Length: 142
Image 1 (cartoon, rainbow, N blue to C red):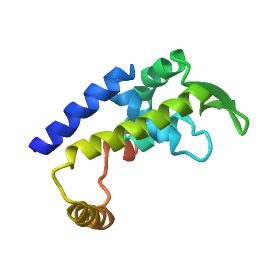
Image 2: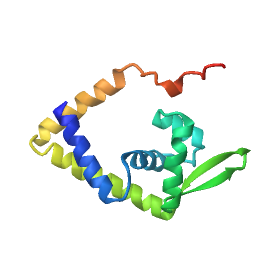
Image 3: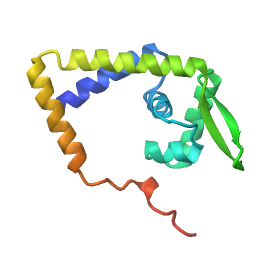
Image 4: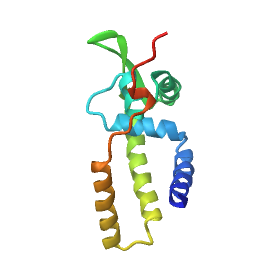
């Protein structure tokens, strides 16, 4: 538990220096990993939040010039989210930050210990059952 708190403190410190909230950084990371611009509902699903929770995050990223909204040519009622050049640069900075933070966090381990830890974490990740989040369930009828 203490390790998770240390990682969280490192993340908040560095991401705050970039002018982002942790939620904005997560959204940028997800968008940076998309092959094509996703819809807002797709971003919400990938973040495991309800779609309305994405709107203020997207608003802030758009106001910062890191992404732009585009009308989906396949469904004019939907909005696609596309990173700007500044948004792509920020994604690269986030990757660099995470590498530095991981290096700092795992500095006490030898190279061999890091390799073993990575193998163990990958095994846990591959064999863990998919966790159902509230956003994965169908909406309740009223």
